[in-house]
Length: 475
Image 1 (spheres, rainbow, N blue to C red):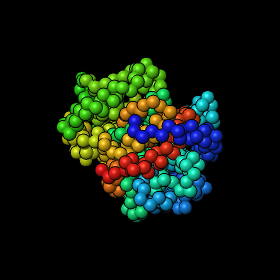
Image 2 (image 1 turned 90 degrees about the vertical axis):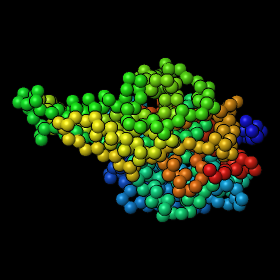
Image 3 (image 1 turned 135 degrees about the vertical axis):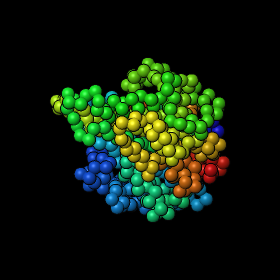
C-alpha cells in the first residue's frame, strides 16, 4: 500500500475510542426518530430527522447546514465546509429515511427503541444508513481533532436525502435546483456494505436496479371453483407457469438478449474476489439465506457482484388472509426485481422483459406489465486507476488496522450513476454495514467496532485525499 502514515494511527484510534460512546448516544437519539420512507403519517418524523442532522452538522462546525424541502416528498439535508483552496471538493451522499418496521416482528428491541447489546446497537436505521452518516460526522470531528486543523483538509459537501428507500424520486430534481451540490471532484457514496468485519474490502461498484409489477387477469370476477373449475382460465396458474420460466436449468435469466451486453469481468477483479474469505456454511449462518444457488459456472461472489439477476419479490392472489372462499381468483400479481451490471442499460432490459412476457404468456389471460423507469437505477463501477480509490484503500488499512484491504462490489442498487452523471465526478463507496445487519428486515443492527473503524477510515481519508498524488481526478 502506498504512502501509509503509520504514526498517525495510534492517536487517531485513541481519539475515536475516547468518543465512541458519544457517537453511539448520537445514533440512539437519531434512531428514535421514526423517519420511515413513503408513509404520510411519518412526514413529521422525516422533518424532525432532517432538523436533527442539520443541528449536529452545525455543532460539528459546518458553516452551512440547511434543510432542502421537497414538494410532495421528504426533506434532504445539505451541508458545506469548503475552506481548503486547491484541495479536492468532495460530495458525500447518504440518506436518513428508513424502511417501515412492525414491532411484533422484532425479537431484540422494538425497532425505534434502540439498545446496545453484545457490541451491537439494535434498531431501524442503525446500519442503513444513519450509522453510516454519523461515521462521516464523527470522521470529520476526528480528522480535525487529530490534525489540529481548523477546517477539513478537503472541501466537503454532504447531501443526505430523505427518499432513498423509495428509489430517490426527487434526487435529480434536487440536484438540478441546487447547482452548488453538483460542483465536485469526487463523490463518496455511503450506503453500502463491507464483506466481513475481519476482512475489510474496498467496494468498487454497485449493481443497477429495475423493478416491475405484473398483473395477470382471468375471469371477470372471483368465481366459485365448483362452477367453473376445469374450463375457466386461472391467472394464478398462468402467472406461476410464466415465472417458472424466468431461469433455465443452468440458473441463467431467460429474457431475450439479457446477456448480450454483459462482460465476464477482468481477471484481476475476479482474482481479487477469490482472495476474500468464503465459506458457505458461515455465509448461511450470517445471512440466513439458505443453500447457495444461482447461475452455473460462476463463484458465489461473482454471482453476487459481477452477474445480473432477476428475482420474484412478491406473489399475491386469491384469499391471502382469512378462510378460503373456494373461488378461482380473477387476477394474480407479481413483483419482480432485476439487478443489472455496468455494461447493461435498464431501458434496454425493460424492453427485454416486455418482449419476454408477451412471447410467453398464455392467450387465455390478459395482463398489465408496469416498469417504472423513473425509479430505475443504472449500475456503476469506480475507475480502477482512480487515485482517490487508492487513497481510500490506504485509509481503510488505517481505520481497520489491517495489513491488507481486499476488493469487492455490492449487490444492491444506488443513485451512484445519477450522481456521476450530474457532477461529472467519479464515485467511490464506503459503508459500515454487513450482510448480517439485516437491512430492510426485522432486528436490524450495526457493530459498534465497525462504526469505530469507519470513523477512523474517513478521518484518515480526508488527510490522504488532500496530499499531492492522492487527490481525486475526474473520470
